[in-house]
Image (cartoon, rainbow, N blue to C red; front, side, top):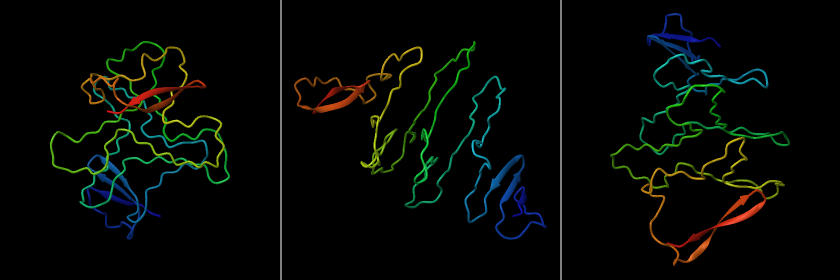
Length: 217
């Protein structure tokens, strides 16, 4: 299928008719667009090879750099939702293998010198609604949400848990949870010792099961 070249939003006279993919050049910005009625596909032709985006050396000494930016913006009022990124790797029916991992966050510092003036974060989940507005949000607001949908007919040799802390390599963690202050809404100064024991959260350390007590408010 031929490509249509758009330069500064103007189709050349010899551009092919129909819904061919677009290569749009607007000033110094190059944009690739799919056929109007189809998705945009980027595939490798050989297994074991991946699609690499902006995997290059960053040589600027000042200013931050973002490797990939995905910012779809809904500009029509209605009932539809919007998802910024969907990642769903899978094994086909009757196919087995090794790990199945949806997202791997692996910030790397190579051995040697070079100080980091701020923080190192593998995953950051910010919720940014601004500081004003009159919206109504009917559902919950959460930084992380997990839904378990696995059958009881499988054989599970390991534990099924919401969060797993792996064994450390050299230096251990300082704590399990780090709160900037007591004013985050996640803590309370009320004494719950006289409250009703509601139940426990189950925590495995190695192969031993422990319980963290929960108290009714």
